[in-house]
Image (cartoon, rainbow, N blue to C red; front, side, top):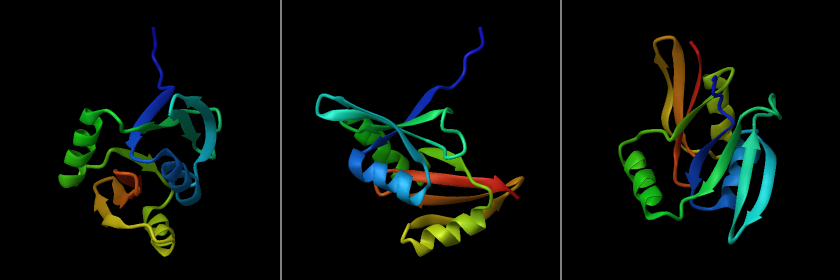
Length: 130
C-alpha cells in the first residue's frame, strides 16, 4: 500500500472569513463547499493544482482545537506551511494588502521563511528555496 495526502486541514474560527483570506490573500481556489449542519465541508486548493491536495477550513468548535490553536500561536508555532516561489516578494505583496507578519523573511539554511497571521486563529509559514 502507498498512502497519499488527499485532504489536510487547519482549524479556523470563522469559515467565511477563512475562505476570503485563503482565496483573496493567499491565492487558493475554492474547491468543495457542502453544508454540514451549522458548518460546511469547505476546502480550497492551490491554483496550480486544482485536482491536488485539498485544504479543509475546519471549524474550531471542539474545545481541544481552540486550546491547541491558542497554544501554537502563544508559542509562535505555525499551524502549517505553504510553498511560494519567492518569500521576499510574497511578503512584500501580502504586507501591502494588510497581512500581518509575526516573522519577516528569514534565511533558514536551504529555505527562506516568513510567518503570517491568517486572521482566523493561526500562524502560517510561507517558504521558498534560498
